Figure: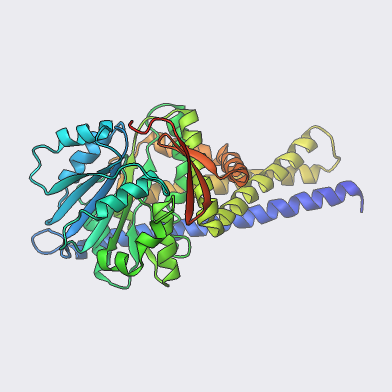
Length: 418
């Protein structure tokens, strides 16, 4: 057996492994689609004869703010228009000189809905977001039964609270969560961000991979206290992944609610997106290393297998090896890998349209499918590998260093009042 034959066989083993991985991804995509469809089919049972949510505990919605996000006004408006009987909203800020403080004060001036604006002050040993959340928790009404957390760049629908809270009727559930969908409306950067975010959106149906996303999460207040979440948050940076960790350590599950998916359409630049994505991956590596490792293996698998198939095909066309059979098999393998990746994206789009149909456009569809079969694997792989070499990043004008999931160091502030 010649050295060339050994190389070709090795390349085909890589291609075969990637094809198997691709088929498994299709199967998982179909499972996710069934999960979404089941959520839609079961939804009518959540409502009473009057069309209201049957389970309506007293809710406190907490939204940390810093700076005026592009869609912040819309987010605040949607929080005031929720079709839910009894809820209050707590807005938490670093400072009353934050531009968001005066903006939210103006937008909520005529609200009949109970709400408060809380000033947390500067964080010294944790992320500013968690610092704001902890300050807000001290101000919620004593009769609140459920805590709901939302990010300032989320754009929730009118039934968002109702759907997110409904599964908590089962006290065995640790927490419920939605996730974000970044719309591809706008320029290239928005499309790239949408492609990057797409893969995670329909992985949350898997209870082994599901995690809380802080922009759309609910938990019973009694559960929050029994898990001693304040201890988990005391010196931490990530609110949601620490919440996930507490739930997992208690032997509980995070329940994904497809109807609690929220869109986000803030504009971005490629530099802003890359900084954001890098930060998210670094946080994941430190807080949920098993998910980070799974993502690394998954992305590198597609990248390496696809590259091996392409190399065999192209080198055959160029005459660098004399096996026409290997060349055609390489082309076929490359095509199969691309088709499987594209099919996974198509299934994902059909799943998302079950709950986000009014918000998704053909741009979302095209960026998801095109991005998945072209640059997504390399982009994800680069971000995952580069996250291995740092624990520092900038978030909302503050540079942090993550020592561990439980310990955060504030390196410096660039402009703490904006």
